[in-house]
Length: 277
Image 1 (spheres, one colour):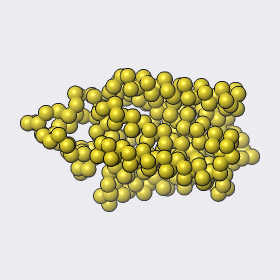
Image 2 (cartoon, rainbow, N blue to C red):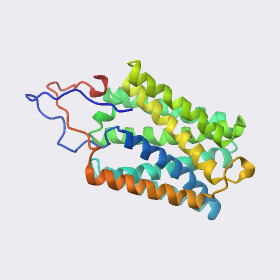
Image 3 (cartoon, helix red, strand yellow):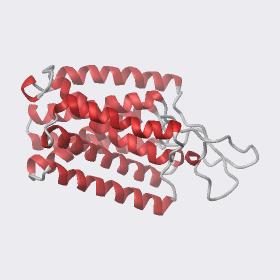
Image 4 (spheres, rainbow, N blue to C red):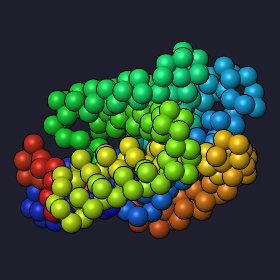
């Protein structure tokens, strides 16, 4: 799913400096790396909490998440390696946050899924009321970027709980859960491509679904056969996913094919380019 903007007006001032937008253009490579990062976040979280003291693992995950996010905010523009480092760290910590609610607090997966869905809705509502847009084409200030990352954290936590809900509560197992979410993600993709659905709604819907899809695939690959996995182990899965992410992010960093183009506006209340076809 690719969201593109209309052509700029040559007579109006630039909204931002070239390259100052904080997030990448939405391309096929974006969705591939996003899926790999969600899978790696799931496997890394599970590996850490089973290899060391879970409390220490959660603290380390939180610190790594904060450090990666601080780096991304400090850079103040989209740079492939810092952006995707933040996404991977969000994946790790978001998984831990969802697991803490169920494993430590004993909250059922349907309840935790609903909680994080409400949190995501609250982020979107506050973001829209403040900025009048939820478009990734307009993430050009620190405040908008903070809203963006708050939404990303909520989508990861919600997606983790949703994936566990289908795998465990509904007893579908990992492979069947992955198949369900793979089918589900085709809905916003088709709606955007052929039915002229709202691009922002399609983007965020697909973004949420990539989390349980990637996590289900990672669990299917890494978890033991007695719990419907292939038994490859979290360690090998992390290694392969990490290498794939490294290769793709290196490609993006070198080619810069996903750096969003600056768009222009003659009005102080610019039109959201994601609403233009």
